[in-house]
Amino acid sequence: MARHLIQGRDVAMPVRVRDATICTAAYLVRADAARAVIAYSGMDIAEVLPGRTVCSLAFVDYVDGDLDTYHEFGVAFMVRPPGSGPVSPKGPIRNLAELRRSGTGVFVHWLPVDQGFTLEAGRTIWGFPKELAAIDLRLSSPYKRCIVRKDDRLVIDLLVRPGVPVTAAGATFALDAYSHLDGVTRHIPWTASPRGIRVRPGGALVRLGNHPVARELSELGLPKRAVMTATCSRTAMSFGEAKEL
Image (cartoon, rainbow, N blue to C red):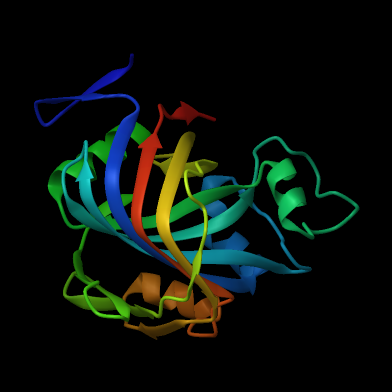
């Protein structure tokens, strides 16, 4: 079993999260603009419609896990697996079954957190682009809200309205996550077992600040209507050992 020493603590792999609350909003954005944003990584965007890809915004309250309790915000893009060759002449991905067969994954572009231990663990173990920020989560009301500030500047204020319940009792989803840090791109095996899922079309309100990440999101076309929002009241996750690509 792989192990990592982080701030004098032994962290065994896989790292497990026993309970977390997750809220996400997915947006269709221009694929060429998204490619420009993540060009540093060497990854390629996956088009789900001609010239369009998915940009996901997520905020997470980690309640119980191996990396302690903390808050997190993420900006991620849907990407094609490395080494998948030229874009298929059949064109973009057309449905969920084809998406799963394609091996399409999630590239984590920005991942602020509010605690130092998870910051060092995330960067050291997986190469996640974690950095410290002020993250204000408001999850006790019917509307779920996250306000992120970095260097005393507003980055984003995201409001998510929960939708209708979706049954996924006992389901575990395997995901391919990708990161890039210090010139190295990595693949991270990631599983999630969500409970208390609610989904709806639209359902998000975004206010952007004047931080460089906010300007990136603005160049992608935000604020705009979300394709879909989802909330998960309780989620268990595990993160495996990263592999350099």
